[in-house]
Length: 466
Ligand code: UD1
Ligand code: CA
Figure 1 (cartoon, rainbow, N blue to C red):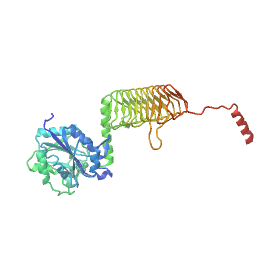
Figure 2: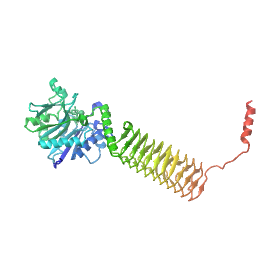
Figure 3: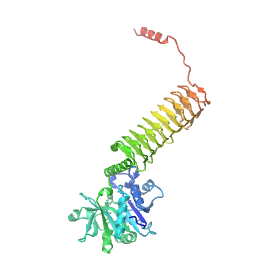
Figure 4: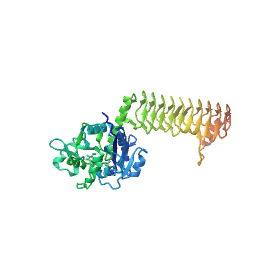
C-alpha cells in the first residue's frame, strides 16, 4: 500500500572504515560496478525518496566525486562523533522538509527498496514516530540489541560495547535502518549525550529518548537478515558482492538470458541484456554494457561499457567501449578498443586489435591485424597481418579505406592515406600514397629469381665444410 506522503533519505557515510585498510572511504568501495553508497542511494530512491542527503567526512571529496552528479545533497561531518551526530548534519539540508526520514548506513549495500518499503509501510500504519528495522541473528555479536519492555514495546537499543551479559544474550538486533519523523528527529538529536563506552553520540539513543517522551516507537522485525548485512572489511565486501552477483544473474536468467556458469560470470548492476542471449563461462560484463537479443558472449570474455546489437557474437575477447552492430562477430582473441564500431555482420578474428575505427557492414579482418584511427567501407576484406601505421611518435593520423577493397596480407598502410573504393593492395605492400578507385597498388620490391642458386650454394657449403 504506497502512501502519498513524500519521504526523505539520509545515508551515513562519513566514517573512515578503518577495517577496510584503504585510502578510499569505505562507502566508495564498489560491488557490481557501483560504490556501496550508490547501491544504498538507489534503494532509497526506488523506495520513494526524492531528496537524499549523504553525510560525508573521511575522504568526503572522493566520495562526492564517485557518486552520480545531481542525485544527492551532501553534508559534511568534519569530526566523526557518532551516528547521531552524523544525522544532525542533515538538519540544514532538511529544514524545508517535514515528514518521515529514511536513514540507512552507506555500508549496507544489499538493502533493496523491498525492505525499505516494508519498513515505511509499517511506520505509516502504526503511526509511529520512530520505526527501526530489526532482525534476529544466531550470532548477534557487534550489533546493537533491541530492548523491549514487559509489554513487548521497544524501549531502547544497547550497543554491544555498552551491554551487560543479559543484554548481550538478546538475539534481536538493530539493523541500522530507520524511519523517523523529521520533527521528532531534530528535536531529539540535540538531547543525546556521549556518555557511553565509545564516547560517541549514538543515533540509536533516540529510541529511548522517544519512548521516554511517550512517542510511539516500533521495531519492524524482518525474517531474513541478509539484506541488512553491514560491510566493515574487504572479506565482508567480497561476500556481499557474491550475494549481489547472484541476484543480478538470477534476474537476467529470469528475463530469458542463458547463464552457462553462474560461478564464473560477473555482470555489473547497470548492464542490460536481451532475451535468448547466451552468456558463456568466465565472462565479465562491466559498466554500462548493453547487449541485444540472440547474442553469444564468451567463453572468457570481458566487455567494458560495450554495445552489442542483436545476434552479435564475441568469443574470448576484450571489448572496451566498442559497438558491434547486428550480427557482427569478434574473436577468439580480439581486442576492440574505445571508439570502434563493427558494421552489421562484420567479422574481426583472432589477434586483431581495432581502435577508434569504424568498419562498414560485412567488413572482414580475420587475422593478426592492427586497425587504428581508420574508416573501412562496407564489404572490404583486410588480409592477415595488415597494419595501419597511425602514429609517428608524436601525432596520430587517419587511414580511410573505401568500400569493396581488398587489402593483401601483410600490408602496411602509412597514414594519413586513402584507399579508393574497389581498389586492391598487393600483399606485402608499404602504402605511403593514396590509391585511386579500382586501382591496384604494389608497394614492394619486384621478385627476382636466380636459377639453380640454392643447389650451387649447398654444394659449395659442403666442400668448405669437409
Ligand atoms: C550501528 C548501530 C548499531 C547497529 C549497526 C548495524 C549506532 C550507534 N549503532 O553500529 O546499533 O546494530 O549499525 O549495522 O548507530 N558514521 C558516520 N559518522 C560517524 C559514525 C559513523 O557517518 O560519526 C557512518 C559510518 O560511515 C557507517 C555508518 O555510519 O556507514 C554506521 O557506523 P558504524 O560505525 O559502522 O556503526 P556500527 O558500529 O556498525
Ligand atoms: Ca557498520
